[in-house]
Image (tube, rainbow, N blue to C red; front, side, top):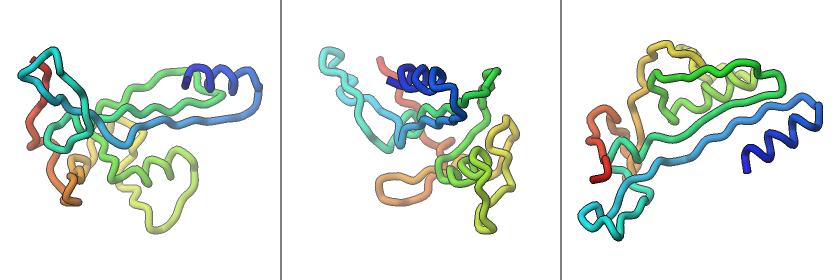
Length: 127
């Protein structure tokens, strides 16, 4: 679907930009029963917070991968940087669209609305 949207926008020869992301990752359920292995929305493992995100535009001509940690808690900073929309209340101490190491990028929010440290969560790899 995203490729179709991208192609439609490109064919329109207009100026456009698109950001895609998910609001959550997925974790495994029924790992002890491979025939019933499923993915679900969870909050106990690192993978539950690992989400896809990409930005594209009409004049994009290179691919840049951000491998430095980024937290969705700071999405407004990313959105401001991407769109050029700014407000005095937005924290710009981190250049989000870069591989700069930034402070406070390991916090995530669990199902109890509690901030937890992503780096202290276990990995949930399938058997």
